[in-house]
Image (cartoon, rainbow, N blue to C red; front, top):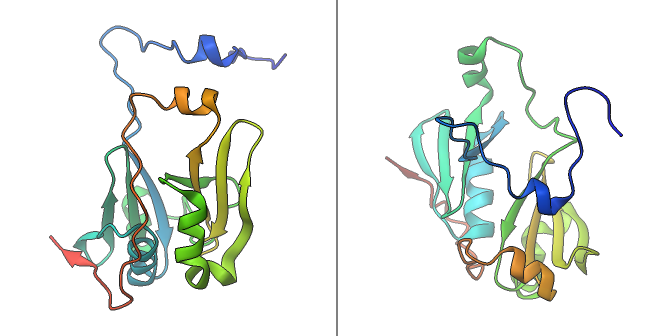
Length: 176
């Protein structure tokens, strides 16, 4: 048992979490800090087929139905008090995208992710088929699809996954 205020609860109990009255909790965005916003924006556009909207030269967003991947430059860190994060130095988080068919995505992306491939498509013990690779900054990226009956049931009611379409390498980053 962990000490302190945190108490482990099985998934069934944890999934029933209700925020305190009047306080809503909703994960909307994950932000990646990079020294090269255009390069990272092009990479994520290419692997997802979704355009990144650039709001400034230092900040853009790739919006999916479930969450937004924000891409911010190291210059934006000054707005948060300075040296609060380091670009290309993440060793704890995995950016996950639900896709329709992991094996098809792997075939389409093989040349794009070849230098950063961590794990070819594998079915995980919790029932997801998973493809793990690194983006140009070294952040881990997981393309996954639920394949077991239990995993499929877990994702019922969540936004559907789309097929991966490879965006051209001609840079589709768009401004606001």
